[in-house]
Image 1 (cartoon, helix red, strand yellow):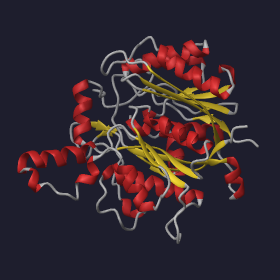
Image 2: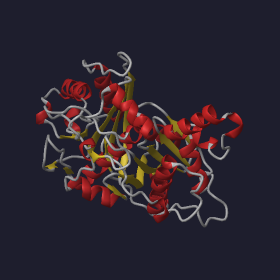
Image 3: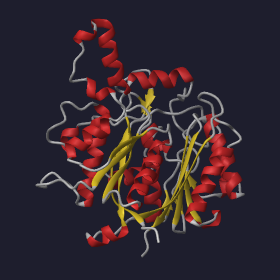
Image 4: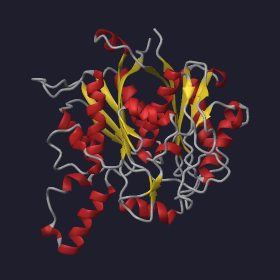
Length: 391
């Protein structure tokens, strides 16, 4: 019998709040952090406003860039919540590690380093800045900061990165290669990524994100970091921890259509959902709620609507669906992990949070299973099934 992989704590730093309780309260109150950028005038974003990592990380952050600091704060909150902090440990636990999903790592650090080399010459670039130019820098810096001596992996699978990281970590635990793992994602808002969004025409011109709404016109780029603590159920029991949810099934496909364009047929997304349900041993009727990947993208939301209706055999409006990117924006590599947190909260509360412009009030649900989606325009599709913990 395969070991059961459970969630025992979470850490999140997001535009709508830091810590799982603040995040949840903001989500269910209908708060949205989408609006004009304070750091980058002329852009609509969802930023972590007035981010001061010193609230959680007293020292050792000078060499970290913004992505690394976001991830390190989420890791601190998760480790503290799970009582797994290694700060005072004489010998850090080699079974404790980190799996992080991201799209860019820190594209600002990469660009700044490369540009200084072009302008001033290779001899004048700062060696202190080089470590932040690799995509696994946030995960590596966080591991150093929190003395995580186990596996340290970075997963890059577009907007599906966060869910892939959770699945990867769960498999690692099932194989007995770790005792506990932080798993999720991170992404920052920076000028370089915003210019990329603008050039593709993906950003909302109206300055809002209204997933599944007929008036939607684009996404709001966002930043965040979200991590779960995953461990085997018997390990949690031995530590006296009551699990929150269980990782039940995962599905993924690559349905590339053309560069940066969704395949409106939604076949790949539908197959990913069917795989996740099949791996969980359940059918569509067993799903209490769906946490959608929809972000306000005209094509992306339409693709997901068609895929969901194909799998569930009913119109989207009749299904228990929420699209939380209306609240915290499109956080790319962190989005899947954020949506997974929303799924966990929905099962705990037996209620789906509102989706601005689509369903403006929380929706009661009844059941044990949540389906979380993360679909990208690059063809990366991932779906995760989680179950409310029951012995």
